[in-house]
Amino acid sequence: MDIQSRKLEFIQDFLKLQSEEVIAQFEKLLKKAKNIEKENTLEKLSVEELNERVSKSEDDFENKKFKTTSELLSKYSN
Image 1 (cartoon, rainbow, N blue to C red):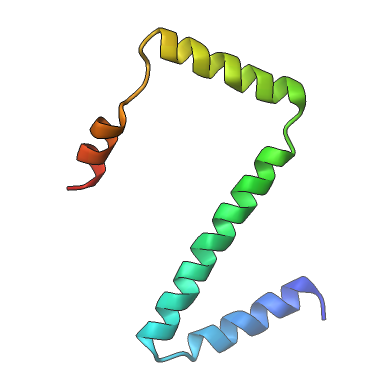
Image 2: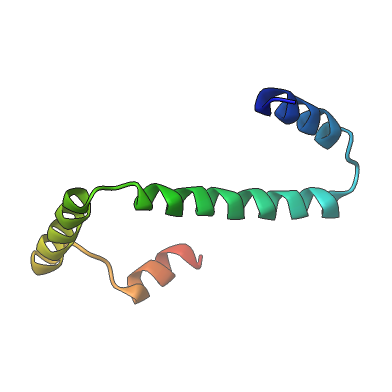
């Protein structure tokens, strides 16, 4: 069975679910899978690309283009 067929079968089975608890578990799993894919994307960057990102981050820090942890927490805790 190819990946497209597997996805369609999964979607059909998912649509039949009635339990909010089970759906919430799938949502958590999907979020975790997205994070893993995002982490894997970083691994595909070249050394040059990573160095460019580091340089930009250092420049941003020196030019005070950043937010403190406290600022982020206050923004997203409301």
